[in-house]
Length: 486
Length: 96
Figure (cartoon, rainbow over the protein chains, first blue to last red):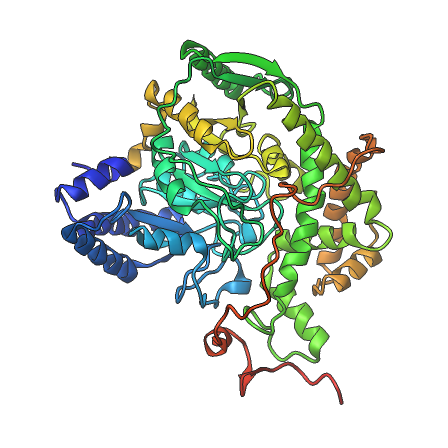
């Protein structure tokens, strides 16, 4: 039996029947990490000792009859989540020496659920990037083709799940950072509604957009893990106090009669290649499953990328002011005075894309430009959100591509920020409006996976997951594993 | 929209970033491109639109009672600091 090909539910059932122990399961993944991670560069930190200790505790809980649905299941955490006593780098030289003094709520909840921490995954620096090439620790490689990027910013989490170096990983999504890499490596990824999952201990990039989520082979796996991390947290002032549905129990909700909106703006430009063909085939599959597909329009949606590249840098320039070389993080050698300390610590600690975004943000927030850029972008954000609201008065879900193309070559877009930013053309809208959205694999362009995106109304995660599950019940793209990692 | 070298220098100063002479023209070029790209927002009619700062209006931004909720963990927190003496963060002298 290949332990790494089993779903979370199968792993849990097998652990419960004592077919193997959590220690054996954990060692199996640690062995796979040892052999495959050097080429993929997907983990920044591997927490082998912690993992085996977690696994022993899980085995005791299973023996004592106190195990839950996730007890003993290994998980990889994106290195943006603070882990008590474990280095938390956020992919940056700035935090290369940072040992977090506390756990993020997501980390705390997954530990409380009995999961096993395998390690911390590589990512674009401070989650700013769409290819995982801005990491201080070097790029992650796509398990389907080592010359290609895995997408970003959650590129390490995407790669470890695709190569089955972890059954499940956490991610964060500010403009597509869960969905785009999930699409580029052929796995499922869900970005929940803004406020559904606590941001406490998740290093902030753009606070009105950031949201934590789950990356796993299937929607069924995502449902099990989302259950564990979702819910109110008083330590996050934007956490929403609403009951969490039972996602797994609602996975088999009927598709018949579900109204799915084909987002006109997503299909009318640049979708004539293989990605368009594959996404259109998904529409047919949903029709065959009994869903009703109707065209809907969000006329302001094409403005989402420029809106995002004002709002996100503005919030980033504010959030990243905390890295001052005084309380934690990188400090330059021999500062002449306090100003020199600030400037050189930040100049050395941040990479070029992060500095570019901080400066973009500082500019659009500065006196004389605030109204023209920042306030204007916030108003367009209102227009885009209103478009989505109108669309959801007609349909239950929206559908479109996740990414304009499959994985591209390492180095292909690093010198041109605008081209890189346009990777997120289909994903950013959901962040601006705070909507839940999910990418699932829907086929291959040559040897590279392609994803399709579903977007739901606020707190519509259950609908997203059940629609994705229905598709995955009649397709097997989510079970495909790159040949080198079978 | 094109930013001059001295504008980039002043933005870098505002953002407390040391940018080398060699990097200045590179940032001037890429920041200019980004500002030109976001320029398309000006075409949108937003005359009667309220700005949106947050995706879930009315749902959040709670206040809590002003009660002590944290214990003193300064030793653990300051273990990450580059320079600390007597529980104080040290920086270069500010007042002569």
